[in-house]
Length: 216
Image 1 (cartoon, rainbow, N blue to C red):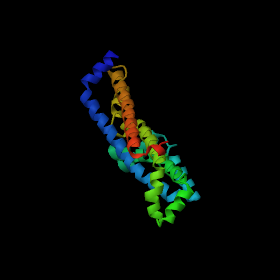
Image 2: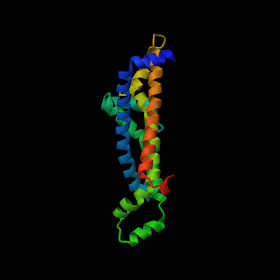
Image 3: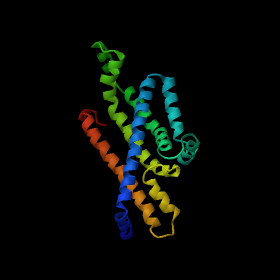
C-alpha cells in the first residue's frame, strides 16, 4: 500500500491528466448516446415492431466483445479518440433506448388524454408532458450506460484511446519490473474513483431535475 501511495504521489500529474481524458471521452460518448437513444426511443415507443427492433439491435451491440469491436474499427477510423467514442456510443445505446421506451410507455393514457383535451398537439404533448414524466426512468438508463462506459473506456487503450486504461495496460505489460503492479493498480483505482464521481454527479442531477414525487 505504501508503494502504491508513493507511486500515485510521484505520478499525480499524469494520473490526473489521464483521469480528465477518461472522463471527457466517457462524457462525450454518453452525450451522443443520450441524443441518439432518446430519439430512437421517441420514434419507436408506440410502434411494437420498431420498438422490438430498436431494443434488439442495440442489445446485439452489447454482445460484441469490446476488444473485437475496437479492433474492427481500426481500419475504418484509425486510432485514438474517434474509434473510442464510436465504440462507447454503441455500447451505451441499449440502456438509454430501452429506458426511454419504457418511460414513455408508462405515462398514463389518462394524462395524455387530458393534455390533448387542453389543445396540445402530439409534439407539444411529448415535450411538455411525456418526456418530463419519463425523465426519471430515462435518467436511470443514462446512469447505467455511464457506469458501463467508465469500465469499457479503459479497454480503449488497445486502440491508443485516451484515459486511465493506458496506465493499466502499461503496468500489465511490464509485470515483474519495478512499479509495474503499482502502475496497473493506480489506473484501476482511478477508474473506480471516476465511476463513483460520475455516480455522485447523477445523484445531484436527479435531485435537481426530478420532483420528489417522481423520484424512483
